[in-house]
Amino acid sequence: MIHISQVAPLIDRQLKLLQPKDAIQFKTYKKDRGFLIYCIDPAHFQIVETGFTNTSLITDVVSIKKYAHKALKREFPRSNMVWVTHHSNVDSPFNINDSNSQQGSLF
Image (cartoon, rainbow, N blue to C red; front, top):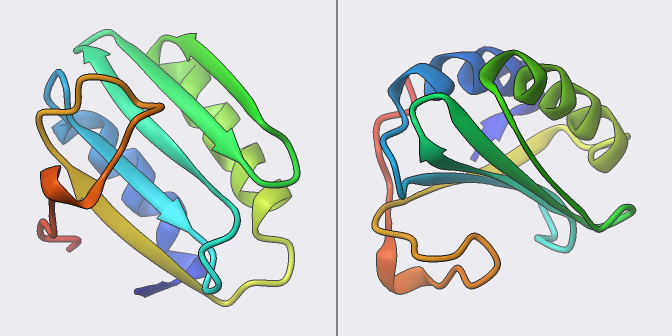
């Protein structure tokens, strides 16, 4: 769990480090809303937003950064803390479970 102010720099850093079939998930304290960033290949990412808005978008790195920052403000309007989970060997970003989860270094 990290503070909300650390999420935006973490997104920028993780977009450079994510390998294909890796995902990073951001959830609210109650874990009822959030979004997931999934690496399709080094140039294309998918963001899956769940909560206030249920959407999915596949695009490049620049657009995914902008959309992730907007999703952060939309899904975490009053949150102070965020759960961050790193998933590897993900076949589908819509079918994430804890068996392929590992907590990577966040800093």
